[in-house]
Length: 431
Image 1 (cartoon, rainbow, N blue to C red):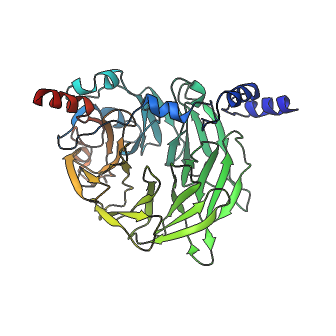
Image 2 (image 1 turned 90 degrees about the vertical axis):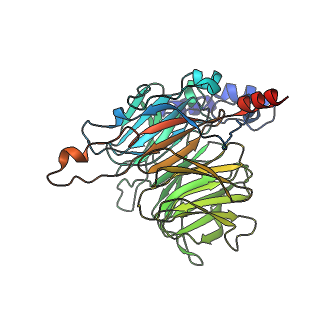
Image 3 (image 1 turned 45 degrees about the horizontal axis):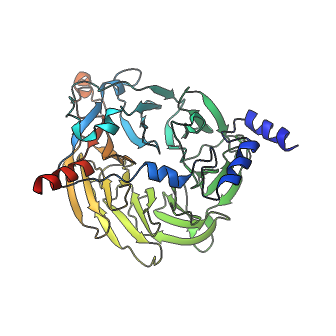
């Protein structure tokens, strides 16, 4: 019966291992492992040591992408975000033309990071390897947390779009692996506004209006667990706009809401632990520190990223400024792999870097001429990605000028920071 059951699950689109493989893995070592392919998290981090970023030296633009996001069926297309894959081999971009584009990182970026030259922005460095065209506006997307190019079965990501179920995409073939469908009281499909895998990658959490629905990654379909976000003592949390899990396997998750609040829950039973108030606008992003003790939240039309100590949630620990007070765009920030610094864009096109130990500004650099709506650190080499762009409205009688964009507007760029190799070279020269 177990073998027949396992076979049925795989036919439905499961991306897990077989029963025989799981038994072999359990006999080898008792350690935290990838639930999809059994890869040890410890061996993963040993193979990918934290990169060293030097922020006292301005970064160089190593790769640039702009032309392929322009023209086509949506001449007013603009980028919305960019996200690195967990293994750092590729990155995904989301744009207003309802498309997700996959770019692979060249080998030179790994082995000759410090020797990469400044690229020209008059043309794209290379074309996307894969384009996934959704039918409606993309609300959110995320990588499978144990994605590795060494195991094609893990090369997947999920996306959620307006009026559609959650899609599980294969990054190798571009095919749809499966769908996760939620229905409302009228038995009609309702779209998730945010998606996130839990820390071990076995569950998919999706945010809806006043509800969180939890899907089993191994069982695509309409089966899910539903939890209400409307608590009598805390008030309704409204639309769940962002979900993040503590990276320390503590079983805690944070849910940001457009009602200007962030709530922390226990993953096992979605018990409400804390409710954080203080964001001036609707919360658009929540992210834990690498040690899981701090939570960072950002909001719409809110110029400050708030830092919370989840061990003492009486008040905000400190605030980090970014230029976002007059835009409705979602502006995403990211934390350095070592956990020491945070980087964020802004509507002024400048990326700001902050020291998370002190909350003080460290440096900044001009990344684009328009809004930098996303900044993301590479997980294993001193690189970072930015995406820029904003909606432009066509003025009557000035159509041609409205489409005229400079090379550093509505673009994605990969930035090369001086890293550990440069530090070692400097020390050698001083000696």
